[in-house]
Image (cartoon, rainbow, N blue to C red):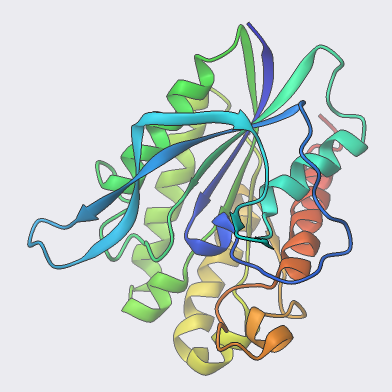
Length: 262
């Protein structure tokens, strides 16, 4: 069995990566970078009213990691850029591989009952982490990458509640990984979208900055473009593919700062 350095990425749609367009450096699949994700299924809430494309952690996919594709369209991915930078920096030992646990689900939040303990996304994330930790002979968790909060801003979550919810999630992942100082890295929203809902977004972004500072690092995104700004396609909430590559590098730079003395 293999030895793995485990990257966990979770949150909503920007953590999955829906950025389109050209990028400074196309991602080329590497046998040393693998991913584990879950098979899609329809999820409906207890009232049968709210449906999303959900992920079922009972039947995970394990494969060489690659960007999501839609025909000839390639979608950017924060975690792939992070993993590539990790290899470039010489941090992966010759006898090890990177394993990315992809736990993001678009349009989900705590306020809409997906990420609290026992709720669907949360259960799926812990299931994928558990499977990942048992997959190899020596699995070493190295980072929790998080991008989420648009749902909280749009649906009206209270900042103090969100602070407690996000802090508890980090603690639960660290406990599961038996890594008390597991680096946590988070980031801001697409400015193109946030500017339209500035009052709500600023309150939630302040929480994300605070949680990042207390538990790891926060990455700024104010200069990063959306799909809409790049292609005038109306998609103002998702970073374009070039921006996602830049963001992935910023996540990695934050990781290097956090682990500089390790």
